[in-house]
Image: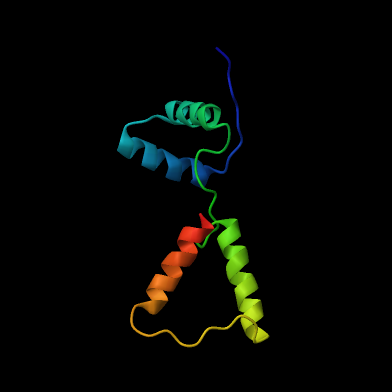
Length: 96
């Protein structure tokens, strides 16, 4: 057995502990679960999201589309009814 020491700000530790307490895990067990999942998946075992709840790729695509729209490039006409929702779902599906 080995010891792992990490430095983290108090608020992050406190907020994470609240979540772990709700699901019945102590901090050490939660870190062990995470590290085992890293091994199983051979990477980060979840999507890394920005503060907006999007992947970096999704944010980049939105920013690029916004820039194109400013320049009048790749514009579609206005959506009607559920077309906008369907379009956004298609974008989200293709981004994954």
